[in-house]
Length: 288
Image 1 (tube, rainbow, N blue to C red):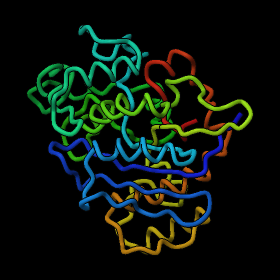
Image 2 (cartoon, rainbow, N blue to C red):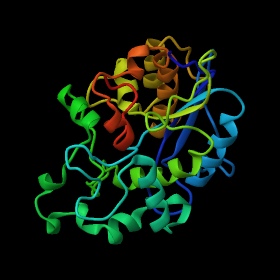
Image 3 (cartoon, helix red, strand yellow):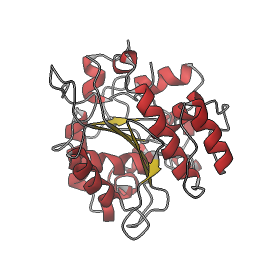
C-alpha cells in the first residue's frame, strides 16, 4: 500500500562545524498550494533545532520529511561500514554508535572523520589515491549508472563533499527515530487501513531539479525566475516570498517534487532494494 501524507518537508542539510548553519534550509509543501520556507528561531537553523522541529511537526499531521544526506556508509560490497574497525552492522545501530563517539557541538561529527576513524577518509593527496576511497552504496552505484553523480561519504575534501553532513545527519536520525520511523530501515510504519503516518526519507535535491526540467550540471537555481520556472513544470504556482538563496531554492523545489512523487508506488519499491540493503545501507527515495 502506498503511504499517504498531508504535508511534505525538504531539508537542505549541512555538516559544517559550529552551532548555526546558513547552509540549512527547511521548506514545507502542504497537500495544496505552493511550498514555503520555514524560518528558524533567530533566523539561522541549527541541526538540533531541525531535529526538535521535525519531532513536533510529525505529531501535527502525517508528514514526509526528506533529507539530502547519505543515511549510511556503503556496506554491501565491502562487508562493513568501516572495514577493519569494530563497528555495528545495521543502520540504526551504526547511528547510535556515531552518536556515542561524537561530542562535537550541535550534532556535528567531524571528529569521527578527522580522528576516530581517520584512515577511512580522504582529505587530500597525503592519504593516497583518491579512487581507493570512492566506494558507493548499491543505490548510489545504480544512480551513477543512469548518469547521476552522488559523492561518497568517504570523500571529505572540497565543497561537494557530503561526508561531514552525512555523519552529522546520522546523529539526527538517531535522535528522531524513536518519534518518526526512517525508511527503509524501519518496518513499514503505516496503519493497514489508513496508510497514514510521518516518515523520514533520504532524497537528492538534484532528482527534484531534473524532474522539474533543470538540465544536468545546472540543477542549482540562483534567482527567483529559475525557481518559478521549475515550480511551474511541477504544476505549482510561483513562489511568493523574497528570492531565496540556492539552499532555500533547493528545499522549496524538492518539497514540491515530494508531494507528487510520494504517490508513485514504484518509488517505494525499487527492484534492487532487498532486506539486506534496507537494513544496512538504506535507499534514496526517487532512485529506481
